[in-house]
Length: 470
Image (cartoon, rainbow, N blue to C red; front, side, top):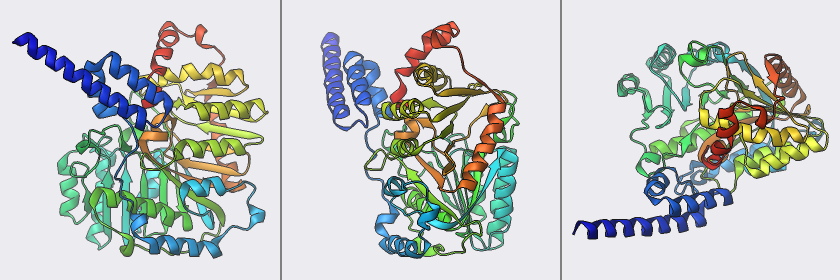
C-alpha cells in the first residue's frame, strides 16, 4: 500500500512538473528563463515545483492600472503636453522610445537637485514633509522600525495632526520585518495605510518574486523625490558591516512630479483599491531651471520589456559617453550586446559597481559578465569607500537618469521600478561630476575571471545560471 501511494505521489509530481514546464515555456518573459525552468522542472521536480510556485516569473496578470480607469487625467496630461512640449532646439536626443515606454510625453519646465547620500536625502525629504500644506504621498521598498524609521513616522504623524492628508505604502517583501505596531501608530494618527500584509498582491498569488521596488515621496503635487534610498539607518552609513553607504536620490519640481504622482496612484489603486485621481493636484508651477524631463515607470505588468528597453534606448543614443552606476550587474543578452556595441564604436563605457557584498549571488554572477564587456573596450570600476547602492546613468551631455532600476534581470522584469530622465546638459554634467568623484573612490578592474580567487573563479559561472531571477 505504501509503495502504491509513493508511486502515485511521484506520478502526480511529474505531471505537475510537466504542466508547469509547459506553462513556463508559454509565459516566461525570456527564452533563457523558459529553458531554465523547463530543464529544472523536468530534471528535479522535487525542488523545481515548489520553487516555481514562488519564483516562476511570467507576466504579472491583473495589475489594475488607475491610469486606464481615469482617462480624463491622461487626456489632461496629453493636452497639457501641447504647451509644455520642449523646444526642439533643446532636445539633442530622440525622446520617442522613452515616451513610448512611459506612455507619457517629455515636458519642459522641470527642476532637479541631486541628493548625494542619506543625510542630504532625508534632510530634504523631512523638510518637504514639514512644509506640506495639502497632502503627502510616500512609498518605500524597505521601511525599518529603527531611529530613521521612527523619525519618519514622527514627521508623518505631525503632518497628519496639522490636517495634511498622508498616505503611506511599502512592499510586503522588502518591509516584511516592519512591526504591525509601527503601522498601527501611523493609522491611529490618521495616516492612510496600504498595509502590505492586507494587499491583494504577491503573497496571495504564490508570486513572492514580484516586488514594488519604488521609493517615492510627493508633496502637494509640487515636489517629488525618487532614488536609491530606503528607510533604515544603514542608508545613513550607520551600519558597521557596510560603513559609508553611497547612494543618490533626486528632488524634482515641475511637470515630472505629476507624472511620478500618476505612478503612485496606480500602485495605490492596486494595493488599496482606492482611486486617488480626483483628490490630487494635477497642475502646478514650472521650475525656473526649465529642464526637459520624463518619468519612466516599468514593471512586470507591462506588455513589453520596458525596463530592458529603456536601458537599450539610452545605450543606443550614446555617442561619446555612457556611464552607469548600479549595485548589481546582471544584464540580459540584449542589454549586454548593446553595451558591447557601444564600446566597440568608441563610446566611453564605464560600469561602476560596489566592491562590498550585500547579496552574494548577484555579486558573484557579475564577474561572469565583466570579461566579455571589458574585451570590447568598456571599463569596470569597483567602488571601495563603503557600499554603493545608487542607480544612475548619464549619456553624453544630453541625458541623465536617477531612480530605482538596477542593471539586472530582477529590475528589468520582476520589480516595479521608476527612473527620472532629464534631457538636459546641466543635469548630465551634475551626474557626471558626481560619478567622477565616485570613480576617484574606486579601482579599475583589470584581472580577468581566470585570475580571480578560486571562489569567484568557480562560483561566478554557477551564479550566472540564476541570472534570470537575480
